[in-house]
Image: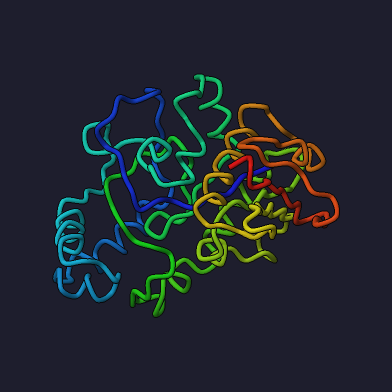
Length: 259
């Protein structure tokens, strides 16, 4: 079983590391190619391309100027410890043991516009490049065209060492759209999280992101291996709702009083 999540815009390269284990990204050549396209763009061009504020455009222009193809513990940090958005707040990796980090390396994958697919302990340097960016390269007019089937082929190869070809999709639509299901050749289970508001249940983005992270963490820490066990998730006050679910889209709901 592989768990898929999205990266985050918010980064943390300052806090104390929770593990010293690390690995090297597996698409460094492709990432270097993308940086080569980005580094030639002015801050103003990045601002328009990536819909950034002038300050963020300047920051990311500098990041791409400083980016190096050699990842070391001096210029990089593990992806799982570098991303700090809502999903990662929900994951609460501060509670991870060394064995949990080892487990995550086998079962968790982070989809990335710059890196394609990251393992949790892969070193990354500060960057921002969302998968939906329409960056023109020799491979096409978008990152989806740039990556083609590479992401799906990599995930499929990773699944070969697992007992079951199941992917738990906790990534956003933007990122999971980079995955070709036919090439992946696996069952895809996509949990949904609904919150009650004014008597109706709906997806509230902020809570849903944290819930996806909480489920990813729960799957890792509890060594969950079967699809049926996913329904036992009860983190953050959510509970499985049978009548709203189908086999590949289990739905978890949380009543307003539990928020």
